Image 1: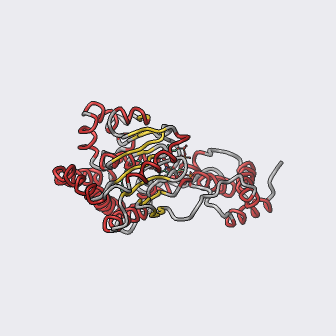
Image 2: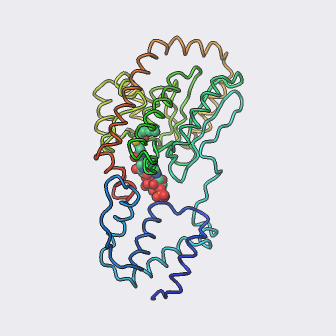
Length: 355
Ligand SMILES: CCCC/C=C/CC(=O)SCCNC(=O)CCNC(=O)[C@H](O)C(C)(C)COP(=O)(O)OP(=O)(O)OC[C@H]1O[C@@H](n2cnc3c(N)ncnc32)[C@H](O)[C@@H]1OP(=O)(O)O
């Protein structure tokens, strides 16, 4: 059945009423179909490499080719109707629990820092880095907090850095984004290096990028057998961070570290445990119950003894780790300006590639 001009206009109005953000992929499809329906095949000059958003839009429109205006109009109406408020309320679209992207709770001497963007696989935004950093600083000074846990809500632990962090360009352009990103990364990782109390990762599902590399700075890593560990830095035109260029070869030996950090080999939870990156793996069905019971018991141990032991174990390495962190952050600043990295981010945003 054809879609009339009236149907098309109604659909355009419905888009504005959507309660839930339909996500970048759908927004690009809507944009492309709208342009095709109103202007026909893509007739704009291709935007430059650094103009991420317009380039993604151009790619989406151009990909439709010579689809007739009529068909584009109908496809637009059908797509909007599949996203309309009635289908949102019918339960077809998952609603995210909570609205905060980082949820911090304290109970029984345990401070839990939970990444809470399950629909985005707990990808870490700039604001989330800042919130985690502030939470770590606060809990390190809180006498009631004995151990600190980082975990994720939903099926992922975290998909690492939010790749849209680099797409909102300030007046200083991509150079400014790279510079501020590098400073933030350095401060963020420094905070993990200096954290004085037991720091535990409860890895509830797959982990990517910085969510994996930081594990080398934790005191214990408990993983569900559903978790995987993936550092696709080369595929992204990027380089190792989170001190992993030092901690990973130390933990698992250079040969295994290189497979992960240079070639992007993804490890299962059991493989990561065998390499020494993970402390213990639990069946997913009993993971939360077993891990939290254990953590509650650990949080009853004498806090000062734990803190002093951690200092004894870690202090010889601190200076080295800070130097490594500084080097890695500088290297990444350069990488974020590279064509290899920009292409990888554009490909992800226009969904030509997935890991
Ligand atoms: C300033 C400090 C910088 C520190 C630098 C750190 C470096 C890194 O961490 S590098 C690692 C970066 N992460 C990635 O490259 C992962 C990219 N994501 C994926 O490949 C896939 O999304 C996935 C394999 C994690 C999951 O695939 P799946 O098919 O199950 O789900 P999707 O439909 O792809 O994802 C759902 C939803 O979530 C959005 N999303 C997921 N991960 C990210 C991310 N890292 N950045 C931005 N957005 C992400 C994805 O786009 C989907 O959103 P829409 O529903 O809106 O399309």
